[in-house]
Image (cartoon, rainbow, N blue to C red; front, side, top):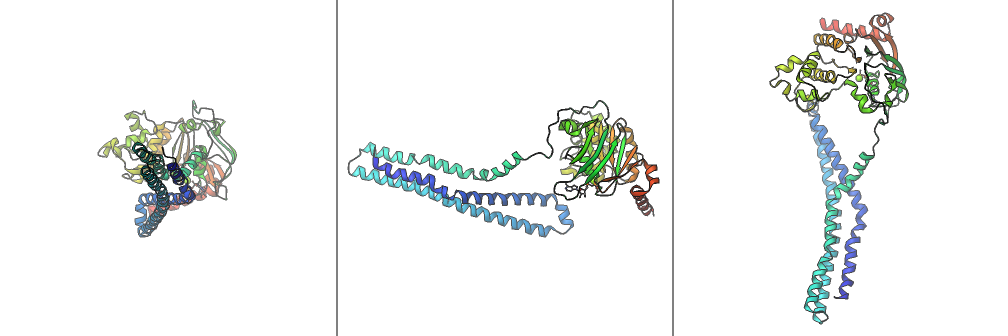
Length: 427
Ligand SMILES: Nc1ncnc2c1ncn2[C@@H]1O[C@H](COP(=O)(O)OP(=O)(O)OP(=O)(O)O)[C@@H](O)[C@H]1O
Ligand SMILES: [Mg+2]
């Protein structure tokens, strides 16, 4: 229609497409800064809300508020910095788009004035000049709209390519017909980033269908031992077998289904009591729920709640007392009805009378299961079939209550310390 129009439209198009590419690297850097400060603020904010009672109790609310304010000011700064670059970017594209269109209009006017094109030609030229920039405008809009996603992509890639702490390459299904034997042999494990092994040369056997207690001072490695059994981590050295097969040879899901656990810090979900219990066993009947709660010594307390088993427990079980939360977690583990039961300080927050009763009930319920019990209060473990004393990551002694007491050492000192504490309480 008008070859001269191509001379102005072509360069304008190229400028609109390629001009902003000069800024790409700067925009990517600003985008990442923006995203990082966004993430930092979000994480801090969530932590501050969750830890509010602690912050209030320690008088740290003001300091945390200042930190949040600093972080949100940083977010403001990075947002504006990013906006500035992307505005220049948009400005350049728009300049090329509008300038190109205006130049094409001038060309159309001049060729109409000189009579080189007819009226339809001029009309066509004007129409096409604005149309040829439409894809560029669309592209530019989508590019800016999607920029937050581009900035977040690195983090998402990191997540997608992250390696699990333990590989799930086992093929054996852990459906033990009866309670299995658990055997630790010369197990050594160092937490990632820690200089000192948490477990070093640990060997012992938890007999099938029996209760084995693991005791020892705080930081001795008891919880670490249990996390290896659940395969949250694999040992650096040595072997760990359940029913004669290495834990790594089992499929992860079946291994964990075969082991019920009450961990040292229990977690309850924002749901009803019944729903929290049924996480372990969705098909459990009401009667089974009640039986598990009875063994854990919490049945009557639940019955006294206004909505009974349908009572909502709040976030992380906030509406229950510490001891109630713990017994609920215990009931949940009992309901799972797995052949292996692991209790890490499962009754530490229960009063002494309650504990004695729960220990009796547990002993009855645990019959036919392999139980591994960790407890600081030795009354909870003195009746165990076998006691393993752990000290600084090593097995200091094994035996039962009487032989260990007679042997002196760490166990006897733990018992003596427990007795002194009891006498002091009595006095
Ligand atoms: N995730 C971790 N990263 C690094 N070190 C850890 C980690 N968890 C535990 N540790 C260290 O490993 C050692 C053993 O910890 P573990 O939790 O097994 O002790 P514990 O015997 O269960 O103590 P407690 O009786 O207080 O619960 C401690 O020195 C602890 O600091
Ligand atoms: Mg522990």
